[in-house]
Image 1 (tube, helix red, strand yellow):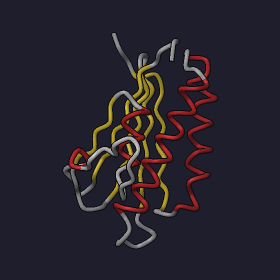
Image 2 (cartoon, one colour):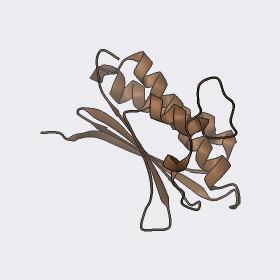
Image 3 (spheres, helix red, strand yellow):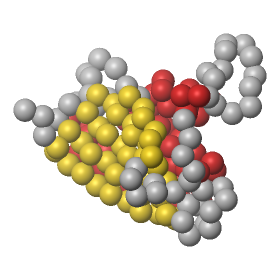
Image 4 (cartoon, one colour):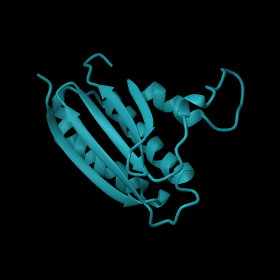
Length: 146
């Protein structure tokens, strides 16, 4: 039976200067819970990069027209077989699947963050929550060979 092994939650203001704090919080979670659970250093690096991309997207895009004290909530849920990261923002909802994936060898404005997230994680979902928030869900399954 799958079960939640550990959870943690962080609320920060919508400020790119807080990215280091977010990443340090994530690294502490990794040191405490993921390192001994079969997660490779490469997987942890990819997850940290995905978290950084999700956070910066929330600040730069979702909250660009909102006051700087608007909060971003981040939740980590470690299951016996996966890590789920949820990032909640208060921006206007949009469909990231409508963003065209960059074609190799071409340049385009925007869309690279979603392309990167889909490559770093096993599952990426961005949807409107019922409380005027959006939730970016990033899921990565534990695998000893990745």
